[in-house]
Amino acid sequence: MKKEIKFSLVYRDMWQSSGKYQPRVDQLVQIAPLIIEMGCFSRVETNGGAFEQVNLLYGENPNKAVRAFTKPFNDAGIQTHMLDRGLNALRMYPVPADVRKLMYKVKHAQGVDITRIFCGLNDVRNIIPSIQYAKAAGMIPQATLCITFSPVHTVEYYANIADQLIEAGAPEICLKDMAGVGRPVFLGKLTKAIKDKHPEVIIQYHGHSGPGLSMASILEVCQNGADVIDVAIEPISWGKVHPDVISVQAMLKDAGFKVPEINMSAYMKARAKTQEFIDDFLGYFMNPGNKLMSSLLLTSGLPGGMMGSMMADLEGVHSGINLMLKNQGKPELSIDDLLVKLFEEVQYVWPMVGYPPLVTPFSQYVKNIALMNILTEVRGEPKFSMMDKHIWGMILGESGKLPGKLDPQIIALAKEKGYEFTDKNPQDNYPDELDKYRKEMDENGWEYGEDDEELFELAMHDRQYRDYKSGVAKERFLTDLAKAKEESMAEKGYTAEDILAIKRAKYEPVTSEVKGQVIWEIDVDSPSMAPAVGKHFSPDDIFCYITTSWGEHTPVKANFDGKIIEVIAKQGDKINKGEPLAYIERTKE
Picture 1 (cartoon, rainbow, N blue to C red):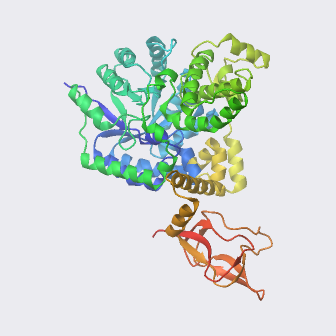
Picture 2: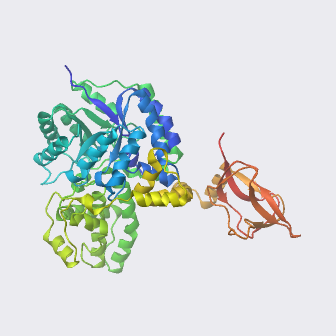
C-alpha cells in the first residue's frame, strides 16, 4: 500500500516571504473558493505571526479577516492552521501568560484548527505551556522544531526535544526549515528517528526554497515517514518562498507515493487571482530579490522571510558606510560587497552568541548585531557595542536557553555592563496584563468583541491596535501606498509631472463652485487644516468653504460618496470657479 502524503498551502507565509504586506480581507475571501476548488489541499495556513499586525497596519480589523478567511475552509472540511511564536505568541517579543491563554480561545472561536507552536531557541519551556493552552481551548497543538545547521544542532538534539514535546501532549511535530538550510539526509534521519519512536505522531515539513535544497529535503522526509508537506502556488512560489505544489506532486507521484490530484483549471484561476492581488498593490512592497534563489544563504543560514527587510536595511546604511569610507580614503563598497560582508559577519557573530536558530525574532537579532558590527568597524569603534535590550535579553537568557555556549568576550561584555544572566522560566519575567487592557478598553468605551477578540488584539498588539482605532494606521498605509506607487513609476522613467497627471486622470476632481479663498474649516474649536488622505465623505457633508470677495463663506458640498486621494488646495489659497480642490475616489457600488 502506497504511503499517502498530504499537502498544506502556506498562503500566509507565501506573502510574508515575498514582501511587507499580505492580502486584505476582501482579497482573501476571493482566493479561498479557488484554493478549495483546486482539490489538493488538506490544510491551509490562514493566519498567525505577522498576519494580524498587517491587518492593523491597513487600518482593518484582523479578527474579521481571520473569521472571513477560515470560514470557507471550515465549511469545506479543510483544516486551517496558524503560526504561533510560543512565548512571543503573535509578536516579536514576549507575551504574558494570560494573553497567551486567551489567544487560543479566540483563534479556535474564529475557526482556526491547528496552531504551529515554535520557539526560536527550541526551548521546551516556551512551547509546552502553549501545547497545554491550545488543547484546553480545543485546538490541535503542532509542536515545532526550528531547523538550522550547526555543530550543536544534531539529530539527537532535535529528537530529544521532540520526545519532550510529544510527552507533553503534542500529537503533531513540524520540522520548520525556515531558511531551507537543513541538509536533506539530516532531515531524513531526523524524521525517521521521530517516526520510529512515535509512529502515531503526524510530521509536517516546512522548507523554504532559498538555497535550493527544498525538493531534495521533501523527498528525504517523505521517504522516512513524513505525512504533510507545506507548498506554495505560482506566482509566488520558489525564490525565497516555498516549492510549488505542481512540482512537489510530480516528484512524489513518480517516487511511488499516494498524492492528491490537482484541478489545474482552478490552479490557473488561483494563480491569476494571486497575480491580480500583486498588481493591485501588494507588488509595490515586494522585493524583486525574493523571487530569486541564492546558494549564499547556505553560508549565513538566514531565513527567506527576512531577506526583504534585510536588503532594505542594507540599502539604508549603504550610502552612510560609503561616505565614511570615502572620508577615510578607503574604497567604497557595492551593495553586493556589503551583502557578502554581512553574511560573513553573521557567520562570525552566530557562534559567539550561542547558535540561536535563525528564525523570528532571533534571526533579526543576529542580523542586527552583524550589521551594527560592520557599521562600528567602519567608524573605528569596538564590535558588539550597539546591541539593544532585546538582543541582550536573548544573550542573558530572558527569552530561553541558548543551544550553544556564549563566547567569553560576550560574557565579559555583559559583566562589564553590570548585566545578570538568568536561567529561570522565561514566562516568569512577564506578569499577566489583561486587567490593564480591560481598564483601557473600559475607559475608551471600546467593546471587548465577540469571544473577547478585541481585548485580545489590544493586549497582543497594543500600539498597532490604538493606531487602527484612531484611524492613524489607515492614513499611514494610504500615504505609504501612494509613495510606493510614485517610486515605482519613477523607476520606470516617468517624470514627476507624468506621475501627477496619471494619478489625477484616474480619479475625480472636486471643484470650487465660486471664485474666492479656500477655507477648510471655520469651526473655532477645530484646526484649520485640509482633510487627510483616505478620509471618507458622504454627499451631504460639507467639503470646505470658499470665502468670496464680498466676505460670504460659501459651503462646498461633497456631492459624492468616497474618499480623498489627493488634496490640491491649501488653506487660504485663492481659487477660481471650476478649479480642483482635491481628487477623490468614489465608493464602489
